[in-house]
Length: 196
Image (cartoon, rainbow, N blue to C red; front, side, top):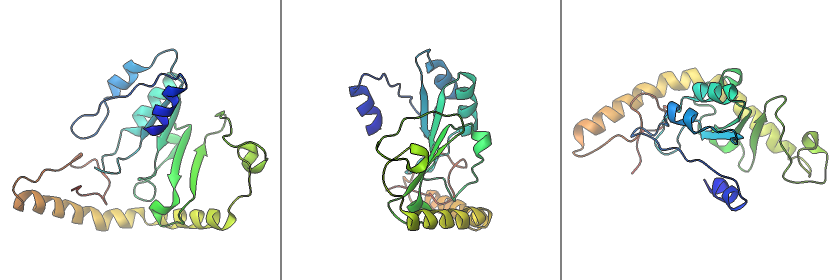
């Protein structure tokens, strides 16, 4: 959100969509908010606080239909649910290594072929002239290996953790007076139960 607020100070018009009680945006509201001036749709893939997973494939299809770049922040999602880049239609997708047991301080910005962006830091030809400075090779390797291992274990993790999550949520709601579930009951990350 801070990035959007900053862009507003530079003259960009930013549209903020409301979410329902589960933390989901309205797909019809999203499509209705697109104008001829819309250049980017950016949305979190899965909410870090309540675990709700957005309808990323539908959102990506809308972006493609309107010829608008689509970015999704998949930081909370990587290694927890399968991400099929071709189905998301994402032009840009961001990840952070420490969320899937990789090294801290390194992330990924996936950039789809034929997606044009300007570098933030000029002065070098690293990473196809997208940034200046020497790459942190050890962290890059650590990120790659951590992501590889996390992706291999998604199904096992889901099969083990999801039933525990369902049981824990059920017991909390049953045995703690006034307890409420934040987020969607089933369309959520398997490792997210509650927020106090």
